[in-house]
Image 1 (cartoon, rainbow, N blue to C red):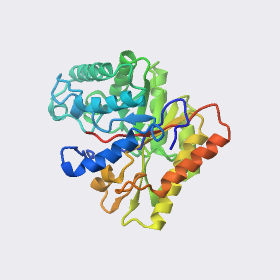
Image 2 (image 1 turned 180 degrees about the vertical axis):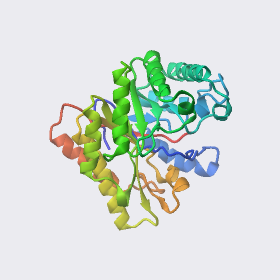
Image 3 (image 1 turned 60 degrees about the vertical axis):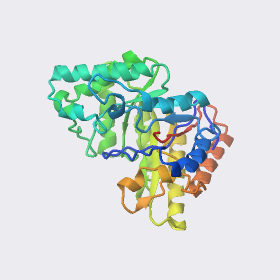
Image 4 (image 1 turned 30 degrees about the vertical axis):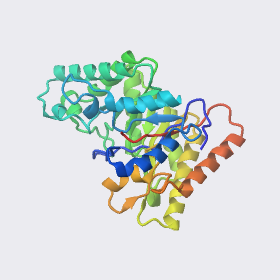
Length: 347
């Protein structure tokens, strides 16, 4: 999959309320797989952009109050730097995968503001100038469009979102600032609520540059091409860019020709939807190798959600995506480039 864009491409990635599966390289039985995995990850003709799945999240970077550790996040940062791939950074404020002390502490509005500011100043400051974009706030909304009652919201209400974006803009003025969430691939209450969130920030003069649609899709009930275009265009109409930030398409197991064809069509539709919306700037896959995917650890009876099987052969969806990109390129679209990114596994 060659990059067709001014920026390297994004990769598939997913976000769910549950902690993501974390794989380690310490097991010698996995070393052969990692060698093949790394060869694909480091191939810039496949992926031009990378995202850390876990290494920049609160649990890893501030495990104790005021104590910062960037070791895990720097693994992916170093890959991006070595390969001259764009680095997309994820995430500054999210209710899940928090360090235990954040949930346990007795907060006042003042101490919560101080903690958010300190966290963003340190984390975004550490990667300042290296991140093409930051997911500043992740999953602040429920599917019905109401605010998620996270620890941040319980203390500060929607003020925490304004504070996070305001502070991120100060700390890294050149990074694109995104709101990121799941179930934004079809018009409905949640898409409308994100629109209100964007307007809320802009009405107060707070910068927000983009909306990330995670796009964790299910092959047999994914939104149609038309619904995806409508949802993404609704964000573009607000004047912000949009990206598919965690794309994967899970299928019912066992794998068979029928569900692989369904999966291929969903990947094709999502890619085509992004290409049809002028302000859709890229696609991030939430990993590209089935053996390292989070999906089987969360959804019983489902899996095979990425583009490479456990044996490193490619899903039919891979060729489907390539064909869509080739057709788009042949149409001579010079106004923008498409990018597809690999989200490397946490080491």
